Image (cartoon, rainbow, N blue to C red; front, side):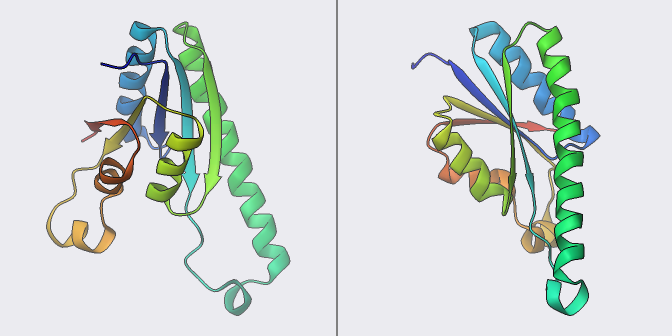
Length: 147
C-alpha cells in the first residue's frame, strides 16, 4: 500500500461535517501526513442580471468567500493543536468536481469527506457529492457518515 503523506478533507463547514474532519485529523496524525482542508462554495443558482446587479453579486461572493476563509481558519487552529500540519483551500463551483480537481492538484493520497446519507427522491434530485467523488477521485476516498 502506498504511504499516506497528503490527506484532503472536504467540508461543507456544517456542524455535521466535523466528524469527517476529526477522522481526517486522526488519519493525518497517525501517518504523519499533511492535511489540506477544502471548502467549496457552490455557484449561485439564479441568473445574476435578472435578480441582482453585477456589483451586488460581486460583493455577495466576496462576503461568502471571506466567511468561508474565516471558518476554515477556525478549523485549521483545531487541527494544528493536534500537531497536524494543515493548509487551506477555498474554491467555487460544483462541489464534487472541485474536490476531485483539488485531489489531483494537491496530489492527495486520501480524500476524507462526510456523507449525509440521503436516500430516495432527495438523493435523486440533489445527487450525491460523495458518490461522485468516490467514482472520479484519483486516490482512495474515506466517507464518514455524519448523521
